[in-house]
Image (cartoon, rainbow, N blue to C red; front, side, top):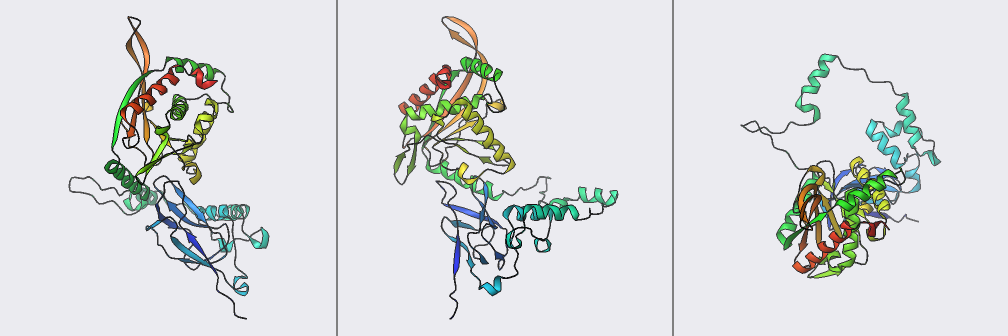
Length: 391
């Protein structure tokens, strides 16, 4: 009886709530390769991060969308054709971690004896193979100097202009960010309002919590306090916790605050989910985990999705105030400046107080001036009486 041809499709995944398209950054398996369930297939690049998509079927890979191309969510990137059992015999499989380590160290997986089920190559097998390889002979010092000085050592040299300047190409992530930010500025009718907040009580609370901090209960940063205050203010101002799509806006049930984190040459915004329900200590633990994951490249797609408002803080760089660009389709973004000791009037006297300027950039299709002012007033009240957030 003839064998029916079967194949599975590798579709562009939806990695974030607002994702409409993404770029095929790199195929990790070549066209025609045999793949197994769990094998790392392709790196998908969005404006937020690069993530790896794994095989969900066994068979032979046929690549349809080439590296560098952009495809819509749901588009077929490749197919995996099931092979008759007699053709599959003798092939080797490896775990995703084993493949990554082998790729990083230049190990040929076909030469590694697997200790897993049916000869599957595991992490231990690759590490053992690496340890058994002889160390490469070191080049003479003079040759090393030439290689280090050569512009070709790190790839093709950048074009040099007559005045000595060079052109720098954007990475694919930077290209997507640039396109989205340009679209945001062109299509979102935004406006900005600002308010000054006395952070004296927050400074005292932070010092108190810092004296009791442990690795399991880290002291919240000022930004953690802003995240918590923002979440509570969003709950009190529902339209600030909304998204604009297709001529209407959606009021969200959950308050998920995105926290802007500087990545490698770009900006990544992981999400603190249900931030209004978390304690300050829980927010501190979450933001530390997210920031570390962004910087070491281990951030997962699910941690970048679902944000309903964003907090961007440049205060640590000494920036007193700024206006940020809204992250569509969110209704607003909170821009946080530095805490500066300044003379202010209190009860008819001039005193020195730690003042922080916070700006709200809002989508005028959802929020109006009075709404933005109400949000900032609630934010100020929370931060000037932070015990209400700590309880």
